[in-house]
Length: 98
Image (cartoon, rainbow, N blue to C red; front, side):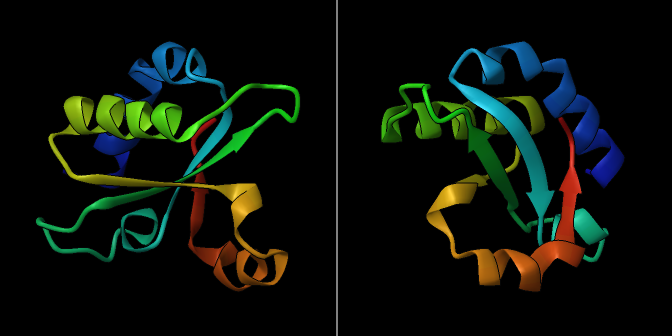
């Protein structure tokens, strides 16, 4: 599945993902740069509004929505849970979807 196909599948499910409390979502890593093997997973970075109630179960739900839409294993990380310095290091490997 190409990055464009992944993006289209995620955008098609944006309402369901946003319904879990996600305000922004990006693909990062190998899939963002289209430098991947067919069996590579999808790494996504999500942002949640501060006043939104968001739990580990919501994060798992987001992963499941994307896995169902793409057929690829997905790992999601909440942006505020990683250091700003690390975000700077991976900035070139982030592809914003919404």
